[in-house]
Length: 141
Image (cartoon, rainbow, N blue to C red):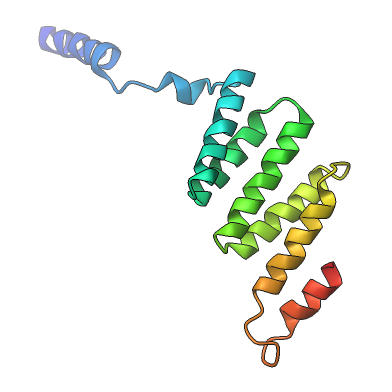
């Protein structure tokens, strides 16, 4: 009986003191405006350095944290632009269509339509063999 009691106390001690630590940042993600602006700036720096995939992820992260709709919409558009730059056309088109659906009053909606059309145009391999992207591009333009 005494061995079971000591074993029980030892298990409780190990769990309370030596158990795996939970990252507090994972539980309470930072939602401050300063943190969002910092992430947006990191995305811009990554984009200027040519690291478009990193920048796209950071812009998407910043979009969810930015309190102002103007900055959030710009962040969503920049994320799509980064995907377009690394030839991830399908992902860029999906993000741009989501941008148009979520931010229909944005002043950049026409640019989003342009990026969609140019993304379809860039996917044309040979106009004699693959005319579908050409027709979609013309329709979007």
